[in-house]
Image (cartoon, rainbow, N blue to C red; front, side, top):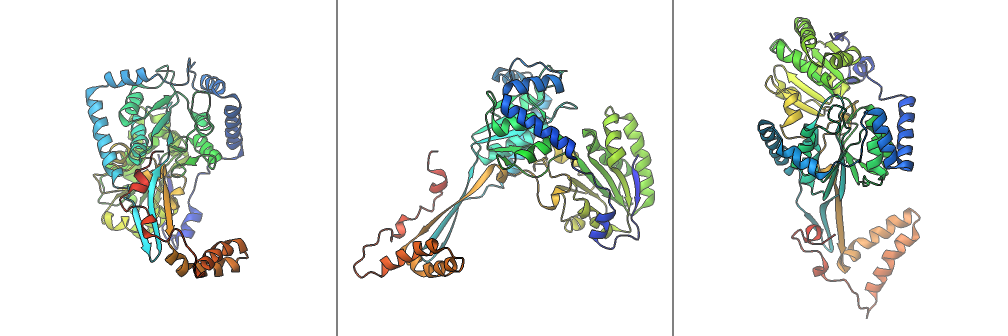
Length: 460
């Protein structure tokens, strides 16, 4: 089931390990060229391109790109009560966690200088939720609730329609309505990213795009970054690394290695252990589980290229492998799991102990399951409210402040050869030095009130 990789006696350093580990490439030039062509077509043809591409890729003929609001309401009304309860529980947990990420306005002061710092949300966020192989209402919740918590005014959602439903699955539409999504569009793939980035007749251009997807979706987000904000990291095909020892339960390890592989090809599914008997048992049990799975084809496709059982010398070496891979999901099913978590530098989400499978994080633990993949956990993290906000700061200076700090500004500006910068301060210092000068703005009560009014009290 899993490709064997024996790293015992070879883990001298993380750099040495990284050079030996198989890593998937994000994409060659051909997929990038295809994505660029799709983006260009959407920019030039708008809704017509979206309708034609949806018919071609998804085999669904759309009467309109936007899903009527009445369908969202109907989806909520027809929602199975047990699923509705699960949705509400997940929304509550996700909102509770992300509320802790909000920061109160702050004031930093020194003599004659005051800086008010606060956050403002973007006005419109665009969310992408995958479709095709499965329904992902959980991803709606994991993207929309953080955006709503951040204070985003308008949230739009793009989801590829399925031929099975003749549109978008009711569970996804219900999740959209319950989590505060404003509008839903039946569009998927790179063309959806282009539509949200640049706008069409129906789809409004957004300020930030968030959400996971396949390689083409992830590449499209890279292409439009800069014209629009792209939240979090390279959120591509799913990944998991399970670190286990002889204290782990074989059944738990085996199912957890293959669970992320359900999402389909191009992902990663790794077991890292220093116990060869455990590796043998997990591979044997995993094979049985794959054969019994209704999604066995997707799992096999992932494991063929990205499934590994790596043998290492011990837990320290295992953590070196983890940091080199920088996986999206990391499970520690071994002794001293909490201690080992403390030495993990690179992972999107860490799950400690036998009772914390990554699937808990996928649905309702609280942190968003939109996580960095393809090694981007080295420099980025899960989707947070900060991905939907901008940091603002207001600088207020009095005559005392310019007198105290102005000479230093002049010195630095002159060193850089920026004479106008220096002169802008010098003129003010000369005005202050004039015997009969009347200087405006030398009142400390010109500073914004320290009550959050700068951030919250103004209409946009």
